[in-house]
Length: 170
Ligand code: RP5
Image (cartoon, rainbow, N blue to C red; front, top):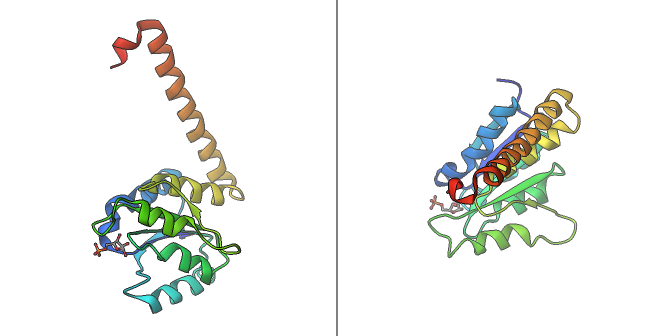
């Protein structure tokens, strides 16, 4: 596997069922990443250590996921100038998911977190790959192909519906 340039972190192992989707997309694009657990509340010093050393280790973007009172993405963003992508996770301690969405989304001016949808770890992986792909030609080419594949899928579904009728698409 290539050198990690994306850091994927999550508040608990219980977030992995969601966060693995970011890792899977980076695998598809051949982007090197590291993945671990860093809890803002249970391991605050580990979080400080992780966020303050990430750039020195060659990390260029961080994907951080957490549920409930989701402070990890915002606190990591406060500790580093690397771009941080936040994934609100609907977890065992979530009320309904809005709690983590708002905890990650409503950051104060000066400390942005690029927040994806609830459980949107795949989009977080895509965004991280796009950050890497903005300066890495190979990754950029793979992302262009990925976007084209999305387009082809929709076009072929539309063609099918138009020619065979919507009933055939159910
Ligand atoms: C958050 O609390 C974690 O990110 C996780 O989503 C949630 C529940 O954690 P566990 O109690 O399952 O470890 O900090």
